[in-house]
Length: 85
Image 1 (cartoon, rainbow, N blue to C red):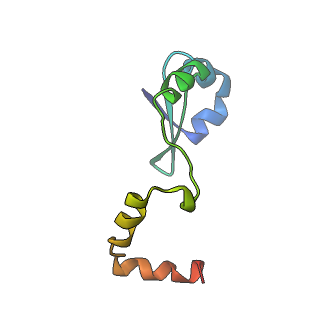
Image 2 (image 1 turned 90 degrees about the vertical axis):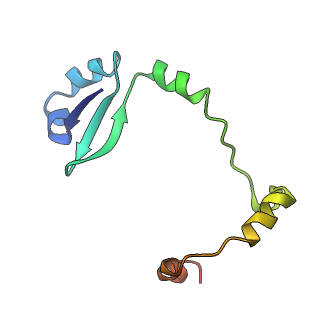
């Protein structure tokens, strides 16, 4: 996989778009991986293996709800309490 910077992508977008048809291209932003561009064909191939499914809380099986009741929230998570109050 080729890794480039955001600036390189901006400077030669067409080149990297064509490159992504053959192999994924990783884009770094501020020195860290940010996104990967790949062909639509490769995305579709990978998506077949993604069996995740969004559900409403009331759709969860009883075993999952029971397991959630056993979870202990880490103390450092308290800094996010204001987001749901």
